Amino acid sequence: MKPSINERLSIIGVAIDLGAGTPGVSLGPAAIRYAGVTDRLESIGYEVKDEGDIVAIKPENPKTEGTNLKNLDEVVRVNTELCDKVSKTMEEGRFPLVLGGDHSIAIGTISGVLRHKKNLGVIWFDAHGDINTDETSPSGNIHGMPVAVSLGLGHEKLTSIGGIENKLDAKNIVFIGSRDLDAGERKVLKEFGITVFTMHEIDRLGMPEVIDRAIKIASEGTDGIHVSFDLDGMDPIYAPGTGTRVPGGLTYRESHLALEMIALTEKVVSAEFVEVNPIIDNMNQTAKSAVALIGSLMGEWLI
Image 1 (tube, rainbow, N blue to C red):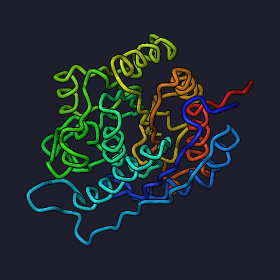
Image 2 (image 1 turned 30 degrees about the horizontal axis):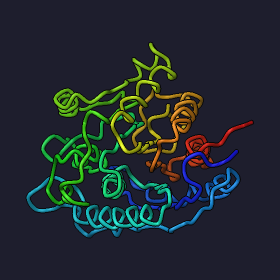
Image 3 (image 1 turned 180 degrees about the horizontal axis):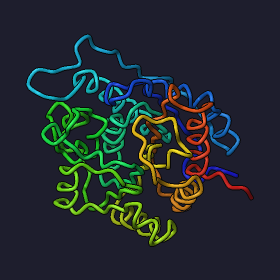
Image 4 (image 1 turned 135 degrees about the vertical axis):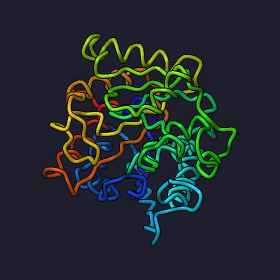
């Protein structure tokens, strides 16, 4: 076992649940650390630096005047800090591994990476679309908006994080494991021509074919691939500790195979694992799954 991406790696925790509807996911980074992520990465061969956590502070009033977005200003502050920290990590020649927290943190992660990789491909594992805006979101929860923001859609306080010029190209974004999309999200996905491999496609084609296609889309003409893995992309049988569980998701082995195949490309430049909620987990099972999946993405091989 040896590193196949970058021998120097930084763990960045983001203790936030303000973008989600269920409290407790702010404890995700601690749960993943407790499950042994550092030891796992060091056993693969990485030189690991733990940067600690960016911690969100719950505001007295979650509402922001003029918008239905919840906790907007604090989510913006946290993601701005994360953007800067991810950017600094990459300046130092280190691989940023971000641990959530809710999926709103992808706004900060991706904007930080885009400062260094102008043409970034993204493979997004998730039961949901995360491509709502303040106009389409039925809940106002920002963890359902990071892809939209990274495309330049949504509230200006969010889209300005990292610079309005640093945005993704829709043609290099791939969703995997989708099975719960809002009506507004379906419309945007079709308008932008974003590739979505729902569970239907995974069942029909098989994970190897889906990942081969996803890698091609995310790597064609890009400077690297960002992997964003929401644990609710997996079936709740394997990841019970997440706040937005949807039955019929990825199996444990499908998830590992997907990440192993992506690792083999040696094109991954950043990654995040999000939405681990130990409060509703079963003996830290979901955090343990996250650690094992991180190992697969970072080049852990049996032989």
